[in-house]
Amino acid sequence: MDRIAQLKEAIDIAQSLAIQKPTMPSGLSENFRAGEGPTMYTEINNQQIPLYFMGVEILEAERSALLKRNSDDFTEARIAQIEREMWMLQNNREVEVLERRENEEVFLSGVQPIRAEIARLGKVGSLEFSSIQLVSVDRKALEPLGPIKPKKNLLVLLGVFFGTAAGALIVLIRNSMAARRVESLGGG
Image (tube, rainbow, N blue to C red; front, side, top):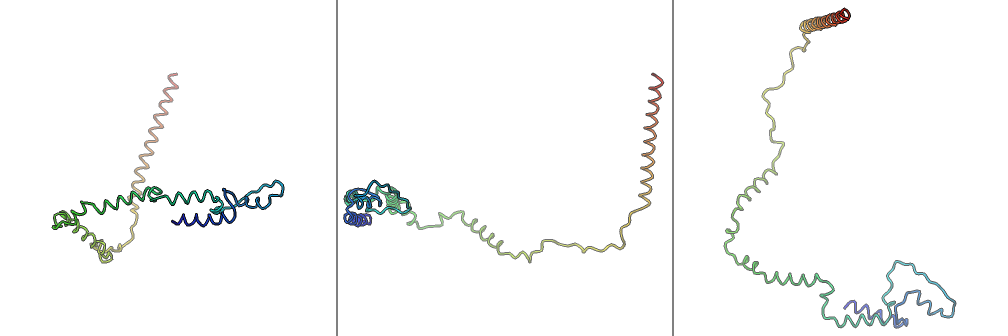
């Protein structure tokens, strides 16, 4: 009905401007300047061209088609589908059966453990962690009576031992290499 009212208003405007066939806004100025030479018009705008520029013939044809229409269902397929779904909800037998049940406990078997778990978890969320003792201390740390000193005697003894072993190893390696050289020179 809104579209029909818009079309009626556009038809009245088109008739007052004598627009019978579709035209553009620049086309109106051509009618008024018929005596002048050839002119080219360019229209650049971002506005929708008013409906009355469609012309009286097209607007009346659209209006008569809309007046003959009985229903708007075919314009939006989803409307008919929604109507069917609403009818099914009103006449849904399963909903009727569920509404008539008397003993709810039959349908709630196994719910009690879940409710208990929800209650337990709800209590965990309300705990104050500042009052919970996370660590237990057996005894307090004590400051040592004296500073820890390196054991000089042990270090010197280990140094002498490893030094002597390294020296002896070097001497043995040098002697065996010298003996090989002598053999290789004497045998050649």
